[in-house]
Length: 146
Image (cartoon, rainbow, N blue to C red):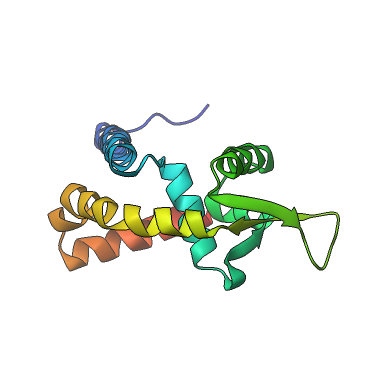
């Protein structure tokens, strides 16, 4: 049987869950209101904007987004319909496909970034000092790696 959480562990766990859900909801709501993009849309656009040629194989994109292959395929298909990205066969492997950032997608990302950054700062970054941010960065890098 799995050992129960101590009262201190339970408090930390619940604080993490409740605050992360609240933060994600605020980020999602404000991003949608300002740009019409979801957090998933925004993350896709950011990742593609940072890659050479603004393109990435679907499997690699799924890995970077921490999405299942079927979820990334579904999501990219919704973004294709809105003109934010396009799908095309991989140049080096015709069996695979790539998601490619469109000019319209890049323009929407550029427009969405300033208000989104304000929300990130107001909701998270500006409440923490540099030492706290460094600890959070180390902790979540460790958890993601695990």
